[in-house]
Structure formats: structure tokens, C-alpha cells
Length: 290
Length: 63
Image 1: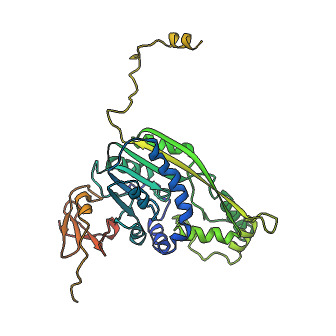
Image 2: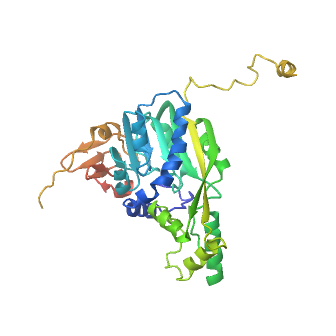
Image 3: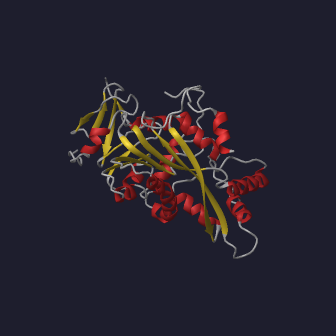
């Protein structure tokens, strides 16, 4: 079904297992997910549009209750893991973002809070989301972007190189924020916007960061990850390298997130004029400014 | 094996779900607890009231 030259970066079965395993633990990281969700759903206050039918993709229990609290009648939650789907309460199903089971124009709002960065075919997933939206429906997504977890990636790579002379990828390759708006545009969304937001998490120990990644279901699901048990010294060495020098200085972990908005195209939206179809000359406009 | 009663599928879901592969219609088989896509020749299981709409988890059927 997938063309042979399509890149398959993530092991989706592993993503699913990690989310299954994280379902009973996810409340431990709910404050972080909630903070990002708050910033994302703030965008709903920028519009006077009343939404009636929303889809929550991979909301891990923090998005659906907020959508219901905002008075949206119908909220459907989906997740790649059925156990994680159940965390949302309400109407839930298990679905793959790359194979969305919804017909055209089913929703007027789709929200994906930190849930699209393990998708292989992101342009395909975005195109399916756009099709599932009614004309003039809104898509809101948050996605971790570089340099999120760059320090962890560097510490693991350096420690592994020192121990073994090579390194396997252990941290997901995140997109750059500049890619995000163009991804929306390529998927056919109108008025695409991607803003950057940064949350800084502080950890007393580097182990706490790994524990949170596990509780969020965010551990390594790269297809080319090493299947071997890591060297026993690897994580202690990498984590020691990650901590700042002074004894009680906490580990500061910036989480850089792209907050993305795009609208399903509709004729009622502002449309660009055809070249030559404007009614004011540029010369006159400049004169007015002067 | 005794038949265990399947929790009913949320009617809201029944009205919006389509086959993830063909985007065509699904038929709800209440007794088997499956959503059937004739076009794709796949039956998607419903487990504990949650439809599992993953092509990898679906059962192949004769179309």
C-alpha cells in the first residue's frame, strides 16, 4: 500500500506500544500536556466561530475535556492506542493518523496536541485531516520542533561514541518551525500560520526527564533504532553529561513547540486577486504613505 | 465459548466512521462486533466498545 520509496522513519507499532504502556502513567505528565493544550486552544478565543463537531487526535486526556467545557456539542477522540484513547472519556476510537476513518466534511474543528510528530507520512495525514473538515473548518496543531531535546540527543550520541565508537539514533528528528507552515500550505490549508512557543521544564535529575518521556509514551520509536539492550554505562554516562555542573542546579529542558493553525478552504475566505486585477496603483499607494 | 455481550457502539461513531482504506461505507455487524468494509474486504473489530480502525488489525474477509 505504501510506495517503496516513501521514507519510513518511525515504527508505528512501537509508537502504539509506547502509548499503550503510557496510558496508566500519562496523568503524571498531564501538566505539561495541559500547558501546551492551553496555548493551542487559546487560538479558539481569536475567532467568533462557534464549533459544533470536533475531532481530538491523540489528546491524551487533556484536550477533549477542554473542548467539551467550551460548549462543543460533539467531541470525538482518536488515538493510535486503544488504551490511550480510553483516557479521553466520551466518544473514542482507535485510529491511525495515516489512515483516518472519516468521510469528507465530518468536523468543523480538528485538534492535534503534540500528536503528529511520530507520523511517517505527515503531508498525507494533513491532507486527510483537511478532507475531514467542513469548508471553513479549523485545524489546530502543536508539534515539537527543533531544538527540543537537542541536549539529550547530543549527550546520548557523545556518550555512545565514547563507549562504542558509534551511535544509533535515540531521539526523534523534529522538524524546523519553518517547515510547519509550508506543510500546512502544501496540504491545502488556507491562511496557514505557525507560531513558536517555548516551555522550559526544570528537572532535579536527568532520570526525571526520561521518566516523563516514558509516561507520555514518547520513548524512541525510530525504525532504525538499535534493538540491542543499551550498554549498561550508556544512560548513566549520558545523563551525567546532561546535568549542569553545580550540584543543585536543576536540569533545564526547553520544549519548543510550533502552534499551527490552518483553515479548510472556503469561498467566503479572503482570496488573493489575479495578477493585474487590483484597482489601486502601487504608485498611488506609496504616494499616500509618503 | 459463551457469547459475551458487546457493549453497543456509540451511535455518533456509527454515523461518521468510514473505511480508513477506501473511505467507503461500513456495515455494522452487531453480533460479531465488527465494522465491515466490503470494498476493502476488511472487518474492523470493536473491542470493549472501541472501534479499532487500523488496517493492520482488521480481519480479511471475502468481498
